[in-house]
Length: 294
Image (cartoon, rainbow, N blue to C red; front, side):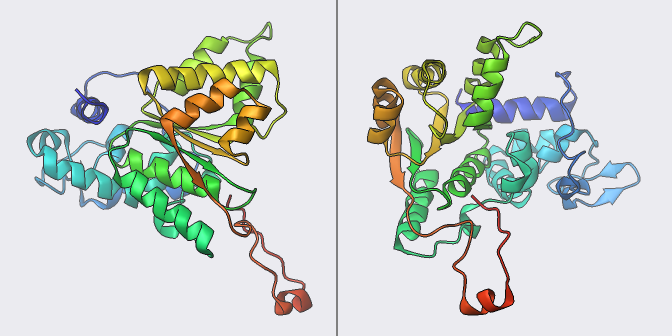
């Protein structure tokens, strides 16, 4: 059974009420994630399934489903298309579940602003990659501020919409958490942190090798890439300011060699994606951009 079928089966069990480990309501802390019953027709007993019209429960897990579990089981082909549309429509909710920070939860391929040839080529490459058979990951590299994180999160969103389990990991936060695991009061060993990163279908490693290279960092990234290399899981999406060759020189040649085999390299060039060019009018008026897109 493939990963998407396992994901669909597990989601159907949750909707049917099978006991499962409790999860936090991802929409509780962010008002923008409220679905209001997902746009479904509400009744006195709760929302109704748009496929069969039957009443539906109000479990938080059901907010991640376009149809009831019975319809998902009976109409798997139609459900696949319905799930994709639903996941992309409610992208912030699904990306929050994948640990994506609030600033990037609206990032999609359709709203990436490709202002020059370099960025248009990168966007085209990502569209082709996301629509393919996904036998390899993708390595996005280029100067700071060109929209690599936006494209990486957009790619993650596309895979989540295909019922892949995804997880976003900021490299700086990962290393900080990994170092904290060696403190006496820590209740999370390093092995548990690495398992959380790799026990998923697709992993987005954001801003790889931006930090100072250390032996500890090399071991952490070598473990992650080696797991992905040996089992071809998780599929890796990585962003970095360095090319694979430069990454190998700075971090570890073994890591870059593995990434070269399991990832398609895509250059993201062009001007800064964070701050649009300042026009003469902007200079006179003293206006500045506060756009925080990566």
